[in-house]
Amino acid sequence: MMTNTPEQPDPHVFVALYTTRMPYGKYRGCRLVDLPEPYVVWLSGQGFPNGKLGEMLQTVHTIKVNGLEYLFDPLRDGQA
Image (cartoon, rainbow, N blue to C red):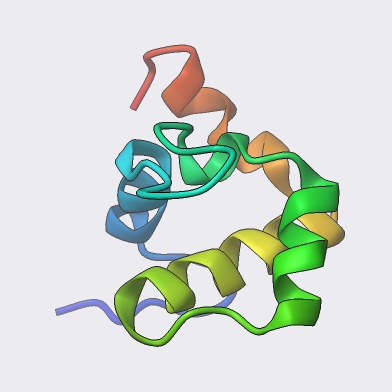
């Protein structure tokens, strides 16, 4: 079995981030990966919620502030 490394991220995580939608607030129904960066940065300052949603939002924050959103292009283009 192959383990995932920073060079080889788990594709299941990307699919989950792409398909999961914000369950509440101003951006309710928006895919987590499509949340505006300023909103995700604001959430970071407020403190992410506990649990799976908080972990996912923290991952989205890391992706957005590091300019890695292009990693979702294959999903957006239907190639994954």
